[in-house]
Image (tube, rainbow, N blue to C red; front, side, top):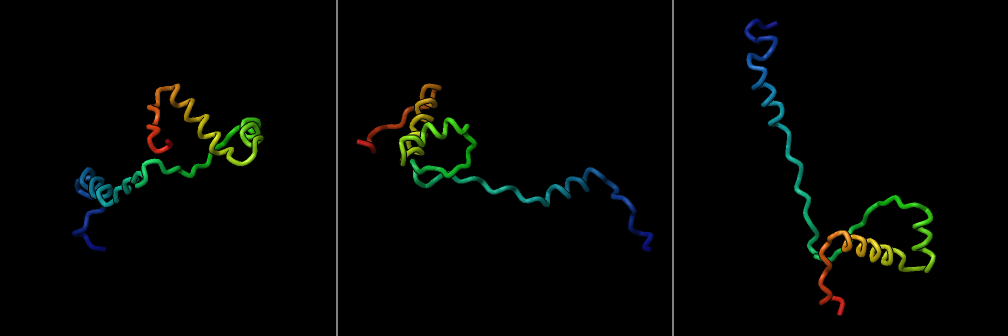
Length: 86
């Protein structure tokens, strides 16, 4: 065993700084390139609510999105422009 090497670092603060400095920063999350692109999400919804939206058949996800948008607008979300929909 070498006697010139200390058992503990002389400056614990510097050792801690060096240890944390090696960590890489998490990558930035990029927003969609398309402004109105839909996001794929996993969502837990009560069975009766899901059945309500699915009862009218295909398009239930769009109907659910419209209902969520209406609720968000009522809560203060700025309504989207309707130029693209006209």
